[in-house]
Length: 291
Image 1 (cartoon, rainbow, N blue to C red):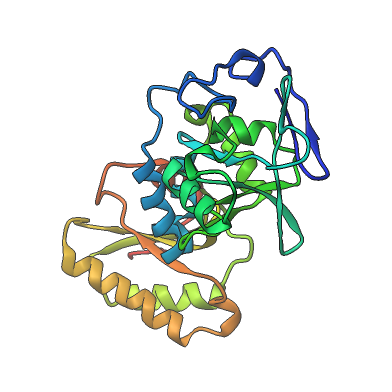
Image 2 (tube, one colour):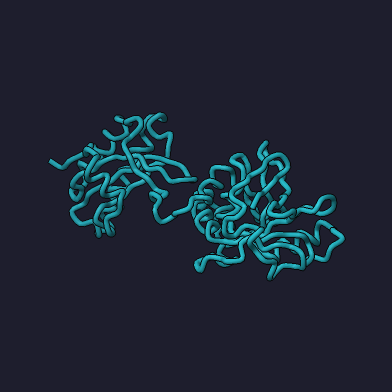
């Protein structure tokens, strides 16, 4: 299948499974294609995409969750009306919209939203007859040119642009084999003044055994300082509150250059160890150790 946009063309193997040449039009209005008729068993339901979209609009830190859901979902793609036929052989032409200098392919999480778009657009076709194609988001992402994004639910009350880096994430073939979207590593710059003030606060808390610092990165959300605090009893809520309070007070008193990033805290042993706890234990040198 080929996908052509206003100024870009993607031409993967037209004989690949799920291509327009190999698919039927079952479930679509007569003459319009379902590009990927064999949907994966674990495909996300429509409400899951719309729920994740609403959460991402309220909290930008949830964009990664939206992409994880979207990757397993189907999208309804409007096709151009009038002029040349949008489907010619194994090639499908898609319209694009421009937003902040980037081209996006409009795509909708449900047939219902596509029908609403048709009614607002005052097209001569009935809503159910709007030319469209249905395709898995991951398949669409794999066919788009590298500089084209996806305008998810464009024109609806809740919509979001998926920029080209997000499209690349959707196109990844083996989600289970990828590193987790949360990564941890050494500090790019060590905020010595801040860490010294935190250590001074920990000296007043007898339950704190040691503390280390690391740099936490969350894909599509941002990065910042992570303080890992080892307590005698990680389940003791009062000790966790005292440690978190000491970090907060130190952050308020630190120079601006030492707090120009988010700061978070974790307590090893509070839950099952994960790759963050393992990396800190193996690679980070404590900046505070109880005497």
